Image (cartoon, rainbow, N blue to C red; front, side, top):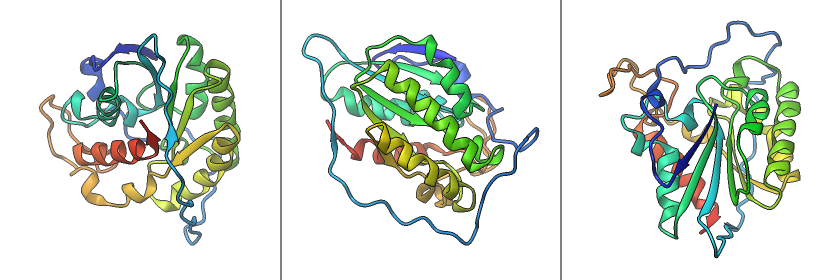
Length: 239
């Protein structure tokens, strides 16, 4: 599912679909986890520059799953995607395209890259939540490398931001270990999400009803969670 958006245009009612919580049903490979292992915090690094073209709007590509799509945010404008777009728009015009949707894996996102056309100046990649309950860490590493190969074929010079996996450490750590070096090899910077996931105030509350009628679960970020994700993503950019 690829969608092109101009500025802060909304993506429509489907942004709040309820069928977005990752499920283990149908998994064909065991998930590689070690609940006792902890991933060291990544070193602090300087913000990466965003190069704004002089002759056109900044073109931004968001790749992701239900988090990127905005599931369980109470309004489209409160999704992390909209918040990041708004933050970038403070520096000039922005055009946005998206690849992905609820339930998507890294492999599915890679297959759908052909539906968008560059150039892109900034790419955000947020996948892994669904992979974390369905495939092994090694398989995810392979799929993630294929995805980023496709990103670089599409946008060879774009600033690349790779979000870590939205899940608890027992499921996210092994996948984060895989994606960090892959992201670095493709010239990207990683924004860990698991430290935000463990803050339960940034999810749910389960059973709460949104204005759309959707009922929140305890997995997806709420409005405060989307705000925290957006803040972390914008923090690594020199805009």
